[in-house]
Length: 247
Image (cartoon, rainbow, N blue to C red; front, side, top):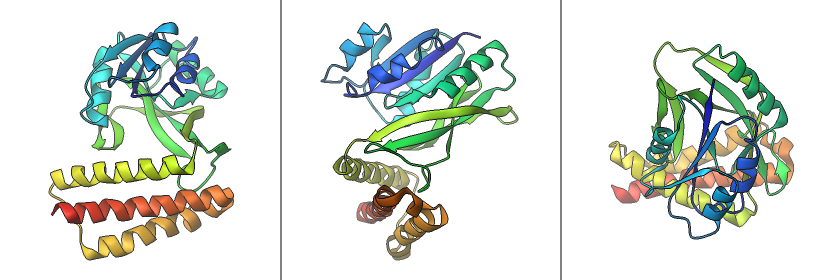
């Protein structure tokens, strides 16, 4: 099997070098689809030998599907710029290249939050389907929460090892991203004809916090778990408040 790694970027000079470096020995082709970054993202990508394509951003799903079209090979490993492969996952992918037994492969994503690896809080194990045959799989879902969908009946297997996600370097960055994602999600829901009711605004955020902090053991992640679960609840509140405003 020959494998293309596809990555979308926008001002990712902080992360993209680590992402590309982790693909050494695994990817036969690395293509970066960039939304006209103003930092040194392009220079880093070209220095590390990646193909660099610029394309206007029209949504996470749309951009990732465009990136799939730029791949040289049918099999793709789709990553975000702030992700990298653990050593174990690196070896698992090499074994798949030698003998693929499924049409797609999932992996657990482990997130680093402000320097701390998160093991609970609804963030781990965060199973993602990222290695697949693009002839029978594509990106779908609701922006900004994209997911890979395979044709019905195609086999999916799970790989050992973690996809390492270097998410937020500061809590302030988390707040900013949560507000941005809440607005995007609200617009996507509005486009689907969905509406926000008073009970969504009143109860959905509380349910999100209880689920992540207590049922999904966020309290075991300490102060970081409290912050993550609280911001997740706030993002839910902002999403439904914005959806109500759009009605």
